[in-house]
Image 1: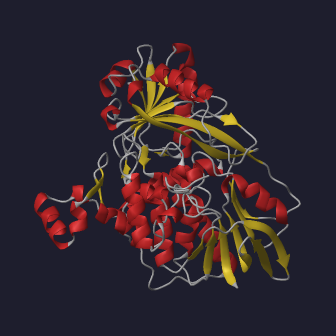
Image 2: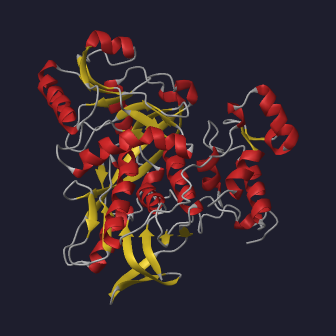
Image 3: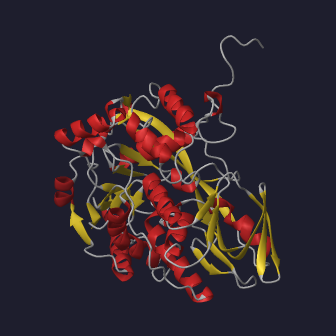
Length: 478
C-alpha cells in the first residue's frame, strides 16, 4: 500500500510529486497516457503570467504570484528554459482606459511587482509592431515565458529520482473508500493508498464525483493556436495581450523560449474531454484577433497549428484541498490558466497540506537539482569537439531544423522516465518541432528508439498505443 497516490502526470501532478518527494513518504503517480505531459500541459500558451488578471483574494491570484516568484529559481535547479521577457496588455480605445486602470489596481492588490501603465510612445518604442490604434498598455516586467514540456518533464524526473514511482498506461476506472484507505481500480489492476491527490485535469471532476456527494463540474475549454517559424520569432519581444474579456485574456502574441512566435488561443467550450482537434473557424479567429493587437504578423511563416484543453471549473477557481465528505482525498482540480504559472506553488501547497495531515518528516538526502538533455549548441566550439570525440553520436545530426543530434535523442531515451515515442523524444529534445515538422527526422528517430528500446520499429508510436506509425510493409497484400 502506498501512502499517497497522485492521479495525473501533468504539470500539477508532477509538481505535487516533486514537492512530496522531499519527505519520507511512499508516493506513486498514475497516468493514463504513455508519458507525462500528455494532457492540458502539452498544449498551452507557455506563459508565466505576472498575476494581475485573477480576482483579488482568489486562490488563482495567490498561487499565480507565488508560482511566478518561484519559477526562476526552479528553472535553475531543474535546468529548463525560462525567460522573464515581460508582458503588455494593450488598450486600443480611450474609453477602455478605466478597464486598464482597474487591471493595474487589481494587480497591485494581488502583489504583482513593478506594474505600470505606459503611454503609446513608450509602447511603440518597446514594440514597433504594435497595432496603430493602441493608446496605452499595462506593462508587467515580471511576466515570463517557459517551455511547458521541459517544466513538466523536469519536475517528474526529479520526483522519480527522489523515489516517486510512476505507472504509465494506467487509467483509473473506479475509486472506493475501504476503512482507512482507498482502493483504486485501474485497467492494470487495483492500487491501494492512504491518501489520493486528484490532479487529473479535465477528468478531475469525474474522479472527485466518485467519492463525494458534493459534485463538481469541469468543462473542457478548447484553445486553438498557430505556431510560426523562428524567422518570425523576433516580431515581438514581449507577450502581447488584449484587454481581458468574458472568456479570459483573448488572443495573445508571444515569442517562445525557443525563438518561435506563438499566437492564440481561442476559448471554445466543448463536451469532448479528448477534443483537441483544430477547426477552420477557430484558426481564423486566432489569425484575425492576433492582428488586432500586433500588425504585420507574417502568417505565411506558420509551421503548425494545434489545440489544447483547459479544465474550466464552473466557479472559475482552483479547487485545492481535502474533500469535505471524503477524508484522505485531496483535489487539485480546475487548474486552468494561470495553472502553468502557478504549478510550482500548487505543488508546494499540496505537499504542505499532506505534510500537516500525515505528519511527514523531511528527507536528509533529497536531491534538489536535475540536469536536462545536453544541448551541444550551448557549448563552446572546443567543448563540442571534445564531446564528439568522446561520443561520436553528438556529431550525427538527426533533426536538421532544430539541429538535434543522435546523442541528445539517446539521452532523452535513457534518462529517468525516458522517451518511448516520437512525441516523447520531441518534447525532450525538440526533434521534429522545426519547420518541416518531423518530415525529415521521424524515420531516423524511429530507428534510434527501436534500437535503444530493443523493440521492432512496428512497435514505435507517435504518442502511445493506438498511434503506431508502421502498419505493414509495401510488400504486404490486403
